[in-house]
Length: 120
Length: 114
Image (cartoon, rainbow over all chains, first blue to last red; front, side, top):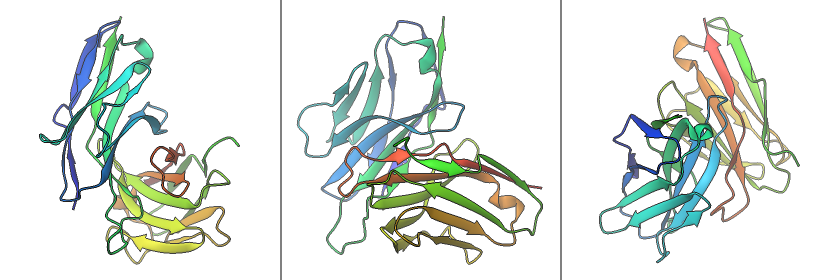
């Protein structure tokens, strides 16, 4: 079974500063993928960044980077130069790739989320 | 293609009534997922379709829930005899096979059971 833990219910950051949102995960699978999604008040889940378990380099997508520490099973999201529009709920999620036995099917397991508020 | 569409956006129903939600995925996506999200929580997996075949169902999906994807295109999620505990956001997502990047979510259907 997979588990995602986000220990920060809420985070505050000043506009233009960087912020790190924490995510730790637990899995016995060797192959897996880690995702971060943003959910504004409108409800839609917006994909931000992906990291594969075998990727050696940390993923980056514009102002988003994923600090992947495999041995510690952590996948923290770093948002640089925060903007007011970054205020939203952020979810870390994991997909297990255990196709041996063939029952993964790519479903995502989500953490409980972190509410980020960006102050002007 | 405008992404994943869900209809309706909001639904208020009386306890005991049946409700049906629709999801139109991205047309070339074979995989379709339903998730349920309660207030302040992350989404929880409900069920998965590969084309028209329903290949996995969560234990969260009680007998009152049924989902279909009859032609491998749009999907419906029906809840019979709704209960107040069914109040939640129901999210649909689609992806191509091997979706490392390709999970696209709809805006969800918010169900309120009164």
